[in-house]
Image 1 (spheres, helix red, strand yellow):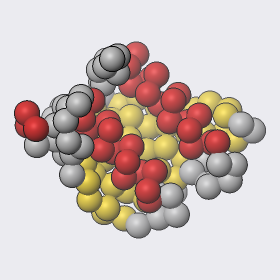
Image 2: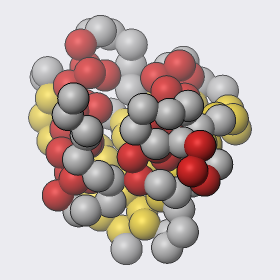
Image 3: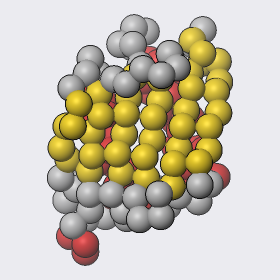
Image 4: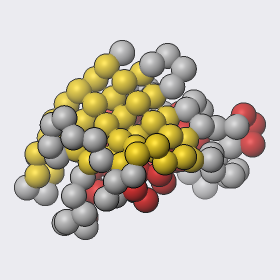
Length: 122
């Protein structure tokens, strides 16, 4: 399953591509079509990961300007989806709030598509 959409966020046209590959997810987010920024991959290790447990290990496959955001998002998504997740993050670092707003929008879409679980409330 592939799901693509675009949205105007903080005066930037942001494009999203979500691919459910059966046993893993691939997610690309960027402001420019056909550009690959940082690419990180995280995979849960079975029952040791998940809510309230250790975060899945992450590997950087392609270095980019916003590598930290890509790595931490891949970890959180792998923990919530329960499967390996590759995240390509091609967003500019300015404005600083863009990454946060884009991540919230992506999370809402992934919940709507039922690819990740709802966050655990404590």
